[in-house]
Amino acid sequence: MEKESRQPPLPPHIPITIFTGFLGAGKTSIILSLLPLLPKDYKVVLLKNEFGDVQVDSQLAKQSSLTAVSEILNGCMCCVLVGQMETALREIRDKYRPDRIIIECSGSAFPATLAFQIRELERQTNNDLRLDAIVTVIDAENFAGYEDTSPTAKMQASYSDIILINKHEHLNEHALDILIDNLNTLNLDTPKIKCNGRNGVDPNVLFGIDSKLFRDSIPQPGIEDHHDEVKTLTAYRGFLPTCHGHEHCDKGLCTSHIEVDVDKGILESALASLSKESVWRVKGFVRLDSAIWILNWAFGRYDLTLLKGDASFMRDASIRLTIMGDKYELDRKPIPMAVKKFCADLQVQVV
Image (tube, rainbow, N blue to C red; front, side):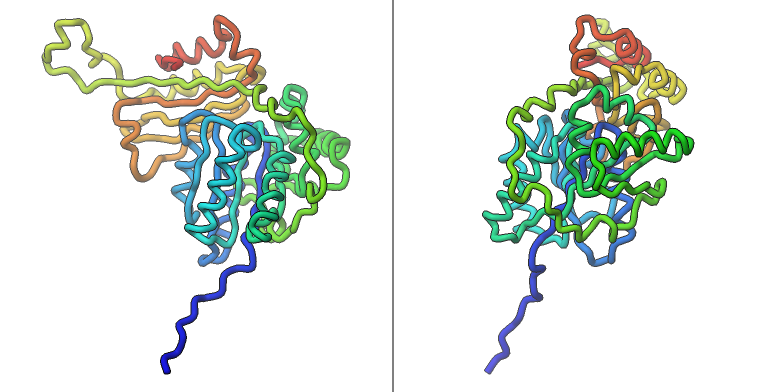
């Protein structure tokens, strides 16, 4: 009699960790810093929700050891895109059966509504998909500023299992004490943990929480309009191949005078000209030194990371950026002078 072949046992359930935090708080960097600290056979799938259609953080994530990256763009999955989130989570479960799903919310996501939807999924899947924790990332250097501007930032800090204090190395002890006091007024009982710079935080601190949040409560009505506080603009600079006397020259269409590469000095100057009051985040792709780089700018600080792998989406462009900021500022006509100057310096069009 042949022995019955046995499949390895499936995990009892798939835990879901939600990362929230305002624009530029450092959610992606912290998530990626967790991966090297996990066992090599530990499978993590990241579900990301991004503003705009420039998939910057997803490109960074794809260069990591994540099992897969799934994206939901141009909307907020805690409200208008709830159906897409549910579908994506079910597809991730069925296709990958990961050890954990991490959801990285857009910068204006309200965690209560999102958590409530996952609680519904728990019931529908008989706890096969289960909420493990809501983690809120705080930009220590800029929290006092964006907390006043964004009601959602306060909600993120208020409804959380763990608050991670990121970028605290830029503060002195007195300023850090004031920040923690401020966070305690919003949420006294939740642990506040300082991140260890680029090393992030120990995953054992964040995983296995088994959150008790929103098991029986329903989120407040009227939260669905929260994402309106953020406005996004898409900036693009294209180019054509160097002209060699083709017909379009006679029509005045030759663009061989436009540099393919972006001058790094001009880029730095343009970023320095932005106002943190109206623009909170700029991210996208720029062509520097005949290579494509990922740009992440938030509240006056920026990083450039070399893009590895397929860059065909930039074959006709030297710049693709998403600009995010205060809706009331960026909706003004004409656009704020700082944004106008930024676009003029980089010779980009807002599309």
